[in-house]
Amino acid sequence: MNSPVLDARGIGRTYRQGQHRVEVLRDLNLRVQRGEQLAIIGSSGCGKSTLLHVLAGLDTPDAGTVHLDDVDMYQLSAARRGRLRNSALGFVYQFHHLLPEFSAMENVAMPLLIGRRDKTQAAQEATDLLQRVGLGERLHHKPSELSGGERQRAAIARALINRPQLVLADEPTGNLDESTASAVYDLMLQLNEELGTAFLIVTHDMRLAARMQRIYRLSNGSLHED
Image (cartoon, rainbow, N blue to C red; front, side):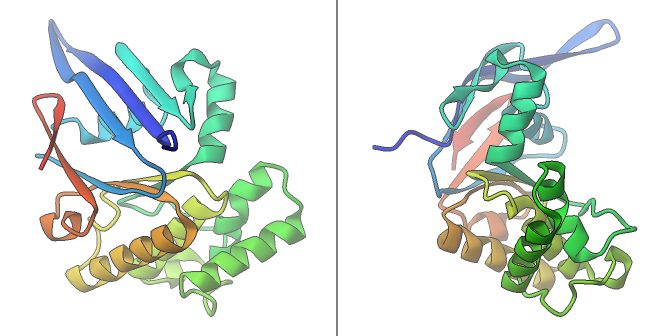
């Protein structure tokens, strides 16, 4: 059996609030197989975003290990962890975080340019991917000229431009109406099937979470499969 793309074991994370220590994550385990679709649900403030930050190598846990693509992320230097994150992970957020002064194509090409890809090649790859997500006619539009759903499609394309093993999505449809949210989920599931990229999605919408292969609930710092 192939090794998982992500394997988190015994994760603990505690924060200080004044005189008190708040345990957000405790002895948490999670394994994501390659090409899998997985949703994490839970009440507001239960630690879902903290968990994603730990899994992404952005927030060091107090206990436990996170293996991404068979590499223990927190045994790497910050620079090497950043390179691994940039090559193996993609991110989609509730708010698209597209750069307003750049076109859709330029936004999607940006991760390739940061990785020192040839400018012409980066533009072509970004164009191809935007066409794939239905934005072939919107390549040169800036974010302010796109609808909410189009901006999220562009954000998904940007997350996929480096062909990551795993995409982490934090409430990716939380800012969209029901119809547009459903269309964005349709797109993610389609790309999951076509590209084999695993998707781990944090969402409060049970109707959308139900479309994933597995659902976990984060409660009292631990994950429980629904």
